[in-house]
Image (cartoon, rainbow, N blue to C red; front, top):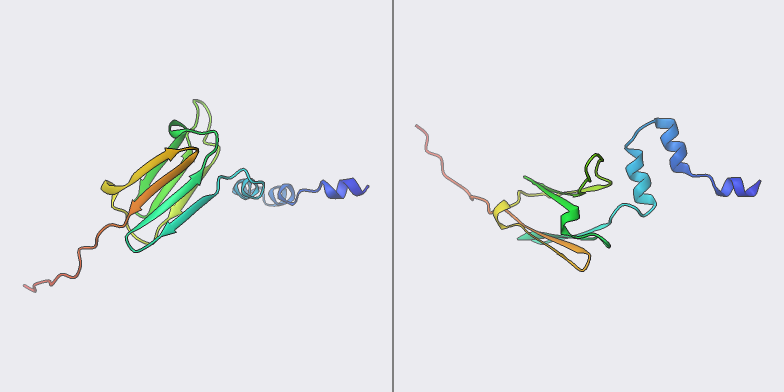
Length: 125
């Protein structure tokens, strides 16, 4: 009887109650199946590092948005991506200067901050 209590999985109950598919992502994260990411930022750029043991560059999709980076498992034909991570940034990214390296199972993406135009004076006509 005690073993049934120990096998109780609260994520199953939460998914059953809500019927919400987004809880699967939380469950994957709690079970350690969701790849963790380290994000380092300073005034000039942000560095995102993700350990993807057993993967290589061709197994990963990177998508750049104005203020976000999306890292996802590249889906095989006929299936959906197994996981994805979205890293939101508090500033716009200079897309022309972004660089990504995949080395020894570690993905490193450098995202330079877009330079602001600064203050401009506007003439009134």
